[in-house]
Image (cartoon, rainbow, N blue to C red; front, side, top):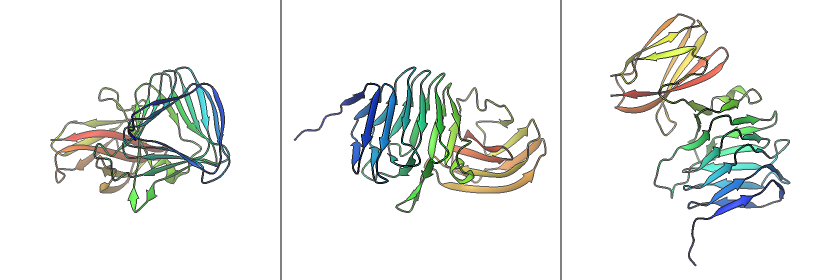
Length: 250
């Protein structure tokens, strides 16, 4: 009758999931050492929640789903970890949903470690408005890379890229200063890209401010002094896609 966290290890698996749901919860981790998991039904699902993780081992390639079939349900307190030089290909759907029983940090996180790579096939989707909640996928760029080119523009906006404080943008197109700040910040648009919209999100993924800019000016000023102190995500819609930065307001 007692439940204990365990590690489920799939060693270079070739696995098919039919009409069922496999749930990792309460600290249970699924560790995949390479291979592919196919889903035979649109209701087939892998679910992670409540301090549980999907972990891709070092130097391994894993594909989850194909042809848009199958679901990876990531809920509050879940984490996806791509270890060094690993690759994860999402061929089905990612579903982002809250888990009300979980009392910790509600964010759904992906950790891209050095040399790792996350990508999506042309038929993959991200669904994030379930139970009336709008959830986001927070991808920590800790030395890995991500390819969102196969996602729709709407789905790309559901993926928030978080860079370490000393490396906020690999492209270095935009510089934010000062950071931390009292709320009055400037954006240096070094390559004069077209900036169409700037959205400010809190750590729960809720949009607290939105600014339509439609400018390619080198300097853009923002007044966020009306926000409470804390961490926010600055999501910048550029001509080439969406770029996100973590900012601190004192």
